[in-house]
Image (cartoon, rainbow, N blue to C red; front, side, top):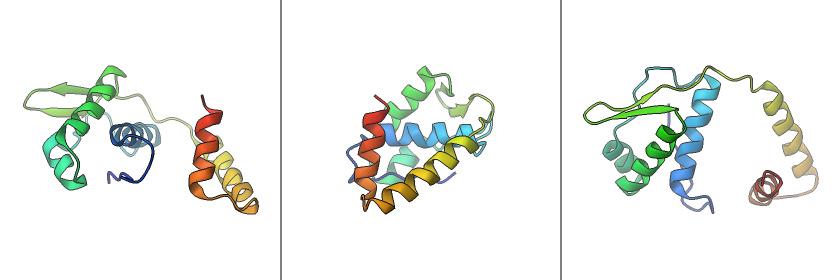
Length: 117
């Protein structure tokens, strides 16, 4: 799985990493028993502080999505693949409506974040 973050986003970097793993597990892109990149390796690849990656891994551990073991790294222990087709259809509808309203991706994301609070 390719990890990507947006350093210009208002969302903290560690939360972006957590979200990517959650989505990867939900979509079945990350399987039970799969090893995530080491914290140092991922931090270097993303050009972030290693503590950012460690914080993300700790949140995922606390949620039960990964198991952290010294020397073994982070292993996916997450739940089964979720059914996301309804969510993906709703997102497609949202994107069409946002484009029709001439909203930027950032404005659309802000609306979604506010609605989910």
